[in-house]
Amino acid sequence: MSNEYGQALSGSVADFRNAEGVDLLDRWMSHYDWWERRSEYGVDPYSKYTLGRITTVTQAHSRKGRVIGSGRSINFASQDYLSLAGHPAVCEAAKNAIDNYGVHSAGSAALMGQTLMTEVLEKRIAEKLKLNDCTVFPTGWGAAYGTIRALVSQKDHVVMDIISHASLIEGARAATKNVHFFPNNNTDHLERKLKRIRSDDPSCGILVVTEGLFSMDSTTPDIEKFQELAHFYDATLFLDVAHDFGSMGSSGGGSLEIQDMLGKVDIVMGSFSKSFASNGGFVATNHPSLKLALRYNSGPLTFTNALSPVQAACVIASLDIIQSSEGAIRREKLMSNSISLRDRLSSRGFKVLGKPSAIVPVVLGPVDEARIITREILNSGFLVNLVEYPAVSRNSARWRLQVMADHDSSQINDLVDATSKIKDSISVFSSDTFSLVDVTSLGR
Image: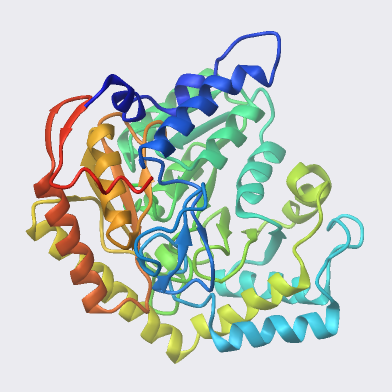
């Protein structure tokens, strides 16, 4: 194929971040052109949008408005782990909240944006985590970024996992130049860094950052060990439970519950967008100072509108389900689906990372081949998310398949069969030359 096609299969968004030029908008034209070229050849799988409810089968369009697949596709791309986004009880809670409170918080939490629903939600989340207090943010990103930015000063240090979420990394880098990374879940490396920092500066603050479930690799840390190391070196542990809270653990307490660490971690931050059918985030702790520190000193909370009463009602209704026998059944079904998908992909020779969870990371390898495979699976009627560099390391482009409780075995089997067929049909000769069984399926 032509070099033009090859350009659509190479490069990353990182290539355009240091563009120069007098006009700040014109700087991004090469970035725009690159995305247009990818779209032209059907290898832009991003910015998809749905035309109906989030379910295991839905209709979606590409960024350009093209129908994906034949109209209705099997959905492994949405973050609705327990299939609660369209649950009747959650939808009814939203309607009741509209009737009682309207649709808008109409203010920041620091002024008068809090509603009774948000106050109830904060108490419920704190109780669930066995912590004394909880502060709700309008987004999970804001909770992560804003908390680190508020707590850490320029002279302090942040020590964090190398594959931490972007919101955590950006919060740390905005707060201090003293940001240190350790390999994923490696407590030996963490301890060496803590020992050196504390030896060099006995008076600085140190924030240790990790996650209950890493979304790109589906791995979990030894939380107790992390907390012990943090306390030994007079540091504070910050644990992001966005992906495991609600969807894992016998009662939905996530990795904290599985490892018997509920109520024992310095700061627990999370998001409602994965298992609680709503935008929003939270930060919980036993320390009495944190709520007011965040409310008046965290930009993403202080200077933006609070979570709407409708969103708060959806989260509360989801939490009710999560803590019920139905929630236990949904988590069991979710885990069964995850194990089945992982096992079937592995048996076909695919590299599947991590441990069973709602996230099934499938490494596809070089980005050029990954883009072609993703194009073909979308055209075959399956919705997936491709993750490329710089979100993951070079030559380890992957799908982050997102499993739901409502997926059934036939949908899982169909995805694996289709993926295997596409993988077998593609032969890579060079970075810009591909031989496909049917090149006419470009989906232009």
